[in-house]
Image (tube, rainbow, N blue to C red; front, side, top):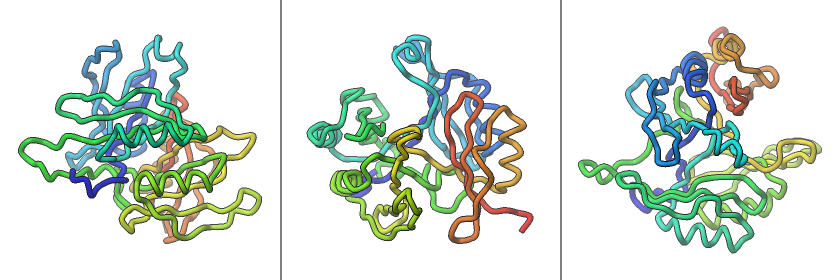
Length: 269
């Protein structure tokens, strides 16, 4: 991956305290295959790759240990954003009022990364990946604007949308063009990376979950996916809503409580 890929979402990570249940759920709902056996990590945790049916990867699943849970970790999804200078990006976030949860570190064969939260508290990873030795120009394909089994939308809910737009556009080179009025909730501000719409920034509600990133996985049929959510221990957070372009989206909780958005066509239409 070249430095010109700054600002791309290049990986997604599910933190879960029950990998087996998550494996069953996401296989049924999205079509992913989470490895049955994880790779042991020095922390005592394990890491499992999340595979797509086309042979590619959708991300990884990190098992939450008892120690991690005691330290405040809970099930959820995190995004990795590419930046060629991880240390510089972390310094900029910290100077803006953000928090460093995991300082920059090198993982052999993977890259350099850090876990941080922005000044409003939304957690993310910043990463400069190491491309495969036999493919130095490789780029990540975990995000797609229109393909099932890829993440298709990245949504930031924040207590200060204007500050978030300023920070993220400066840090990652994103642009913010276009908005959808949402009444008392304010505007839903569309964000782009290299002229491609990658998501939006909205106002977090005072009685809600606070500042956080949320992600939408592409599914082949929104109604089939919704049925699978409830049949495999998850919870739908409302009914599918039609979005611009004619597809439908819905939020759900997986069986461990991680929020995942789903987006796709309604095959019955």
